[in-house]
Image 1 (cartoon, rainbow, N blue to C red):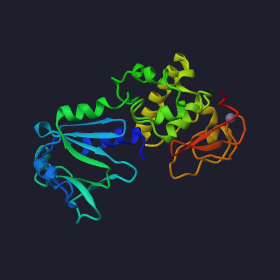
Image 2: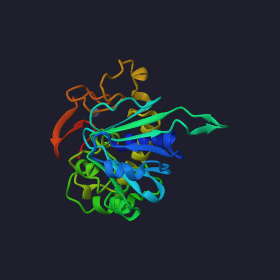
Image 3: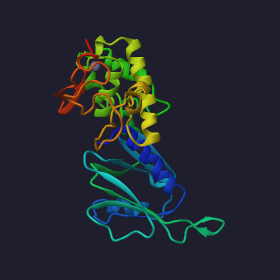
Image 4: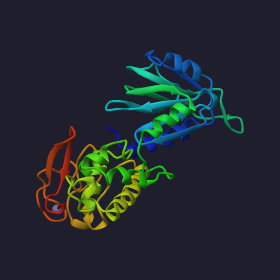
Length: 281
Ligand SMILES: [Zn+2]
């Protein structure tokens, strides 16, 4: 499951390639054929992300709402689009006759969406309704962390589960929740209502900084300067998620700060990672 920074990055990448151009839209697989027919020939005007939800604005036609879920992918290509491979729900492509700068045709771009849990056309109010069901997103500048605090401070649920609940905070996934709790020395099983306001404000500020960094670099790094491989003289981490982290998928390995073995347990159907030495109740 991609974390929120991936979706914000995707919103930016889609806008960079397609915004302002009338696009060819199609659904080679057929499942979004009606929607694609309405979009075909329309210009993409704006893109937005809220948590793990991506919205592509097509002016008066409305918004394409995309949720990748566990298996969805949205991949880009350059040049004339090839024959679609696999189950392409939505293909967007720039047009060959589209002039870029001073009459010179721009490079052709296309993007293929496969396997999303959601790909639907929404009106403005319908899009707003999706957003209204989500908690504040650390990557949206207008987000108000007080809305999350109101839920957290009244909840007996663990802070680890609350951080993953998209109605409470939108966009935080398994990596950021494990890492941000580690960075603040908070036991993941502490109830939300046992957090102090100061602790929440610090967690939120840190999520904003870490996730912005994730959008910029397109990977998740959470270790402080003194714990990088260079600073500690240790080999870099090898993991298909990339990035330097404290506890995520490091079960049984020594904590980079105190040396205790990193612990793991299942919580709300996802693997939780933490350091029992650094994160006490
Ligand atoms: Zn530790």
